[in-house]
Length: 475
Image (cartoon, rainbow, N blue to C red):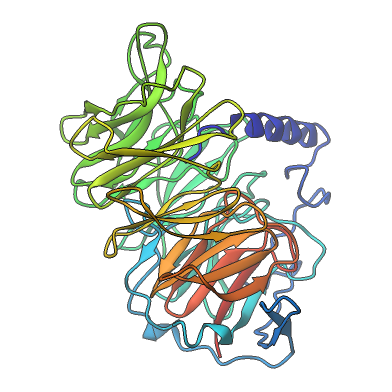
């Protein structure tokens, strides 16, 4: 994730403490109500969930599709028809945001997407769903500012269960394992996070991790589940002085950790996600150098619990440049280096097994997580100016789709690319970047927002717009 959001985090932290001083449990950008209302899937007494509402597709003056809601309910397919799941923001352990299993939404029928239901629609309250919800066996599992970990019917929003206390202002997205365990981070008032394991079917707690993690105030931190080795990985983000933890998936006890701010001469860690491939972890780390520690990418062997590879930094970049976003696509590792202003960005590619730089290019300031189609060998980079489609082996531009404002983390499914930008959800043709569909949010999106696409549903945060959470489906 983006390690250069620290200035923004500092601003958000002061905002949070101000509201706590006034006796309000939510961040200041949320509702001013002293008792936060839960705007989630389901029908709690204080919350009205807008029922399924299809729309009439029209064409605006600039030729882009818009949706005008009506009042006729759609008929949703039964949950029993589900064959695949969307387990977390980023989809897989490489955080590719590529769903190879989605086939129900196509280029031919995407214009028929309508709002099936929404949470917090037209209620005057403002709640933030960070990342994306998880979609598991017909259920939607969510976290959001001001609410609990909650699960309900993905097609109707009817709540099944909730867990824990109301979040203050920061709600990292839930992660679900293939065997139905939800890993839930609850951010406390001191910027630490408690990690819980919860049954997806019942909402019952399995364990609470043996320690808390200094993840900071953010909606971006996300665990990685390693089912092969029965571990859960989590990074602390301590301004270059954090640790990488491996937590026992069955008990919540710490199995091992690397890095500590006490290790002034050793490697420490920073970042929000832990990409995993073939027992190797790829993370940003502060590595001691000739003058001072410097952030760049390293590889950690999860079996030996050691850093076994350090990736090179472009020689021309001075100490003011730091790792921003990072991820894996096929056999390549990618990271962006950003200067102090975040206006200049260098995208760097490495072979996973070699420290050297395979290629590097200058790109506009990156504005969200990269995405990857491993079958087509295409890398997608969201920037403040456009969405770039690049050949992952060479960095050659395949196409570029210009945008009005910053593009946030894209998702790929069945030849379609989905993302939030400005005040809309957009869908592009993966082949040439041409626009297929647009859906209005009612407000501007946020950097942490992604799109979940699974079993004919498109789910994304409204960031306090017309709805706080949207669920679109086919009529």
